[in-house]
Every structure is written in structure tokens, then in C-alpha cells.
Image (tube, rainbow, N blue to C red):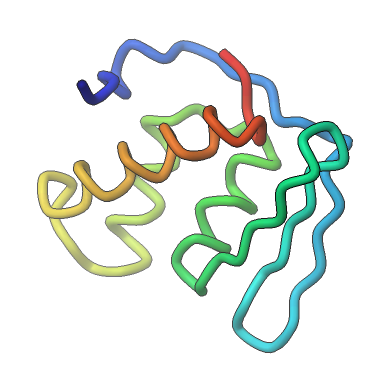
Length: 93
């Protein structure tokens, strides 16, 4: 079951993550779990916005402006990405 992004009032970014950009790919390592993530350019954009702890509704707004798409067109993908970031310990609610 998908989370409702509109219900997320705040979150915390895991500042213990180590990340590096290699071309248009972001590699992020979580030393707490030993997991490594490889993010494409869109994932990198969301990751960098999360790192700034920008509220989720503002992240959605920034993405719709940047990619010139309607929010409903990206909502499912962004929701899945946020769920993955929670599961992998990138952010906590």
C-alpha cells in the first residue's frame, strides 16, 4: 500500500550517508545498513531535494516545474521513490 505524501509533514534526512556523483549517476552508501544505491538523474534530483529537507509538497512542485509535467503524472513514481528512501534508511518520518 502506497503512502500518502500529503500526510508527511516532516522527515529527517540521514546525514550519515556517503554519496558521490559519477557523471549523471549518484551513488549513495548507507554505512548503517551496508546498502549502496545507484540513482539516475531524476532520482538524484529528488535525493538532493530530500537532503535539503524540503517539504514533500514543495518537492513535488519543484519537480513538476523542472520536468514540465502535471503533479498527477509523477505522483505515483515520486511516492514509490520516497517509500524506497524510507525503506533504505535515507529518510525517516
